[in-house]
Length: 346
Image 1: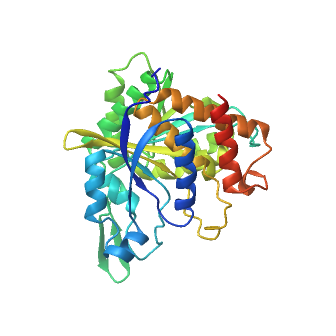
Image 2: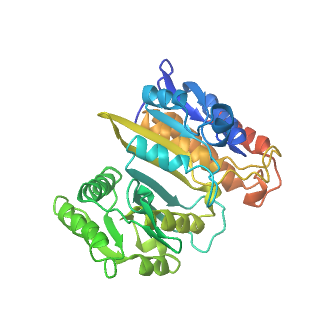
Image 3: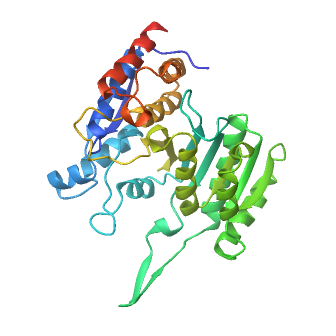
């Protein structure tokens, strides 16, 4: 475990997003400050707010900040459906080659769900599949969408999954495909998994089709440990798993990769920007806070990460001061202040 460094100041890019993004970002910053972590937050714009100011959703100023700091905490950014600008998330992942999306799903105290023993991790390939954005209009009635799967992309995400399992004392890695139908594309991903698995004989392996996985997850999720899969399946299954622990409001993620031989990481809440409650002091910052906890671990502020996580869990366990989406009646500010009170008491 790391020791809290009270003297070092970290430079981290903050993308506040839109909708409830600025509100939950403010909450998370206050909680981190209460844990005595010194961070110089470089606030930058992305998405709709950036487009309104700069005419582009990822302005050079933002990209330069990320290149310099190499670490980002990112609040939700609205992505238009079917029209408008393309997903900022996808653009960031592709630009910085953040090939691994890590989505843990583990029960929180006192959050009633059908299962109380969920503790699994989705490792999602983050740059390929249909998210490569390769679409061709054949004629006015026909579109071809290309499912891009490569040996390089498949091998490195499978290798990352096994390394993650070893580092985090996990026992099994299961590969998720639809290789019975997508015999070439998913077949390549499965073949790469089998080859990589030979390097890690101490880790158990399993192969499962994505449709069967979805059924098994809503029947007995405790049977799964680490799951690795191509991009589209990972997008869908990780949201399904968020539902097993209370919804997207409490889910979190990390995007890990290399850019120009340097390690880069973007930590983000996975829920939407919730414009319907923006500015009403009702938003739940848990998802972004849990992402920030993972960020603190990443920068070796382990003591602060443990303290904040313990404080958060105590607030959930007591169940007295929670936001409306968690079944409570308290504001974002009240929920935040309760966590801060716990942090300072630890």
